[in-house]
Image (cartoon, rainbow, N blue to C red; front, top):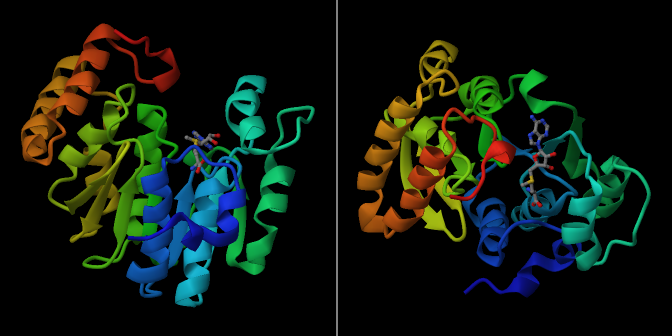
Length: 263
Ligand SMILES: C[S@@+](CC[C@H](N)C(=O)[O-])C[C@H]1O[C@@H](n2cnc3c(N)ncnc32)[C@H](O)[C@@H]1O
């Protein structure tokens, strides 16, 4: 079994990921990736996920970079609940880019920072071997991120890590993957919330536009959630998807995670 100490200096970087998810990220870049493309981390927060990916790359030695995308801000509540308990000294203000740069300095040139609203950004065009989506907090921004990054996956090789697949307040994530089922094969669930998919056919921008979720009615979203419920029942995920279904029913018309109230 992969031990926590394999994460090395990445363990010092605060993260919202579970222990299993942290080990997954490291394993994917250390042992699974072949250097067939760049590593893209959508929603790196203070750098925790990026650090685990970069530490794995140091083991594999592939000459690729980890691209850390985020708006790099944190309010007092997140600073108090995530950063300070994980050893960051209290600081003023909401800008966490300097903190992330400092925490990720051990991996130097391996890491490229991309600051801003990800849904308004472009991707240069290099192939992407591993795409982590952990910023799908609203249906419309998730749709735009998919249109920007998914056309650069390598069929038969690239993995898509859907970090929020099982999060009860983000029903559009499993709906998106149901609508993209012709392009992606689910491989594994990693607790808590992550599903990993293999891209077996690359969707075009037009196909991604057709798979958008933001304008779907609650009824249509629920019908896709029922399909996901059936698809993943044998994976032991029915109860988790029930929570997502109940979450949407209790929050009709809502398309942003922060608007959701627990049923
Ligand atoms: C759950 S946190 C990511 C946790 C991180 N991967 C870790 O290891 O701790 C989600 C991040 O996505 C970012 N985010 C969400 N929507 C975004 C958007 N539209 N543009 C830029 N960043 C966004 C937030 O700023 C936040 O840092």
